[in-house]
Image 1 (tube, rainbow, N blue to C red):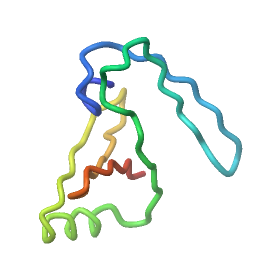
Image 2 (cartoon, helix red, strand yellow; image 1 turned 45 degrees about the vertical axis):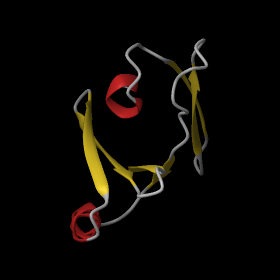
Image 3 (cartoon, rainbow, N blue to C red; image 1 turned 120 degrees about the horizontal axis):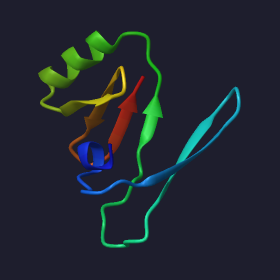
Length: 85
């Protein structure tokens, strides 16, 4: 997953802290030369409409397969990464 999302060619430990309102995923690595893991996850009602707007605005998006799920990520023109649920 780290390679697919962040272009890091090795497994990275992830700690998850959550309650019924918020979820944090903390990425643990011993190498400080890698790209940062900062990203925001947003839950929306209509992914298809968002993808349409991304295409119209030339905003990059990509999918990552995780187990039986297909995760959607958007990278804006400033390099900000958004996970969309």
